[in-house]
Image (cartoon, rainbow, N blue to C red; front, side, top):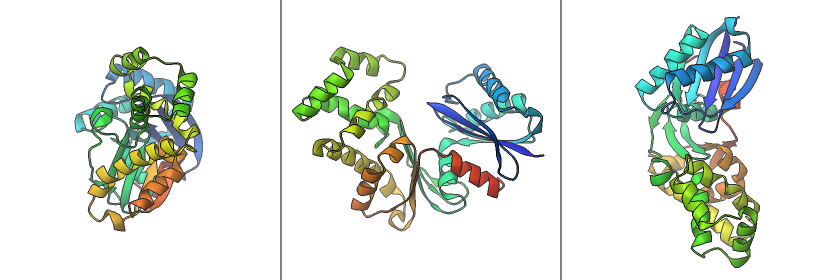
Amino acid sequence: MRNKIIADAGSSKVEWILMSDTGKVLNRTTSDGLNALLITEAEANAHFAAVKELLGQQESVNEVHYYGAGCATQSVCDKIQSVLQEVWQPGTINVSSDLLGAARSLFGRERGIACILGTGSNSCLYDGNQIEKNVPSLGYVLGDEGSGASLGRRLISDAFKGHLPEAIKNSFKQRYNITLNDILENVYRGPKPNKYMASLVPFLSEHLWNPYIYSLVLEEFTRFIKRNIAMYPGAHSLPIAFTGSIAYYFENILSDAIERQGYKVSKISRTPMEGLIAFHSNFRV
């Protein structure tokens, strides 16, 4: 039997699927987040070996398809491929970016604009097989419009600069009980400032009934559209789809922002995995 492993590796978590060649899911598990750019080969080996034990049926794995955060250059992809070969020894290994994974999940073999809205954000023009064009994300300092990090940053800024409505500001202080020193420490000295800022997003979700908060989120999604989606040629005539927790939990307001700019959302999913299972059940890479 030719079994496959599919990995959707983000910085927050990695979803793993063991499936048969016919598309039947045999096992699935989740491991800690992994950024291929930052991890050493020894760390990756230990990580993958632990997952191997959790998934089982090691002797029957013939293909591994790994879509990962940080897999942006050939040297990084080669590093991950080498470790995957050592751990599973499959006949076929494909290591690609998480953005290509999102595109294949959302569109299969169809052409469209694929977008990720999670802790960070990204997008690409997908030709049905590979990424044709990518407006660079530039990360949470220079870009990541519409992401959890950007939304959290905007909330923090408005809270401490006095722009939030009084009732919302008081609610924010009661909810988190954080000081200016706490903010500066976590954002400028903490190990993962993007995740810290994104951790405040549930507050926005719970207060969307307030016009100021609704407008804040709408504006941030509009920035993503204008600075990313609008830069792809023919964007108004192409299907646009999203994956990621921010897109999923803010689906209504995201659709509102898209429609106000003259576009239309074709699909929104919480994670790419179900789409990747379908893709690798129906197509050969």
